Length: 201
Ligand SMILES: [Fe+2]
Image (cartoon, rainbow, N blue to C red; front, side):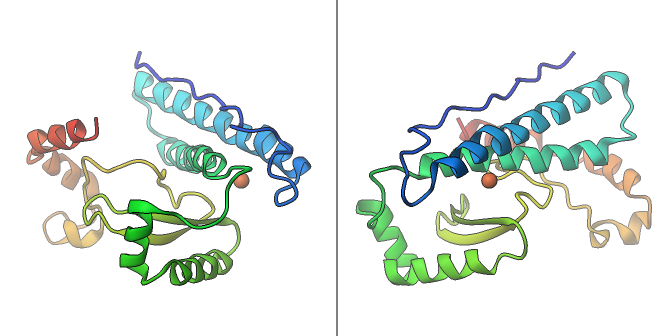
């Protein structure tokens, strides 16, 4: 049986009413105690079901549970960041290294905030606006997510990537993507994967 760590809802790093009047207590209670908890529970269920599937060797519902893991996982991890990103003593502008990075990437804090606000306002339906650091370029970027995830979990980094667009295999394998995945297994550079894994520690 594979070990699956159970995720838990972390307490808020401040009181429910600490962000008043900007964010009201009732919203914080519902948002944290109900909505965030639902993502934690959903992620645990998805991971347990995927562990069960591996155990049984039955991946017939893998698409469903991967979607659930992405939705609830991204929801859970983003909310952890969101709570910690706020403080009763917050506001103002960043200083130091972050301020320099923002100025260099966006021109000024004013420009950064204008784009961040516009991007957040333009998200279709439910979602997030995120300031991110790209781990390859080391640059800051502003990105948005519809819902939480688009089938991925934020705060994860790819260490093994396999392109499953048709252009990656169609000439040789036509519609047989599974055969292409078998072929891919024969050329994986596990040293590279291991190096990427170690670099994260
Ligand atoms: Fe939320």
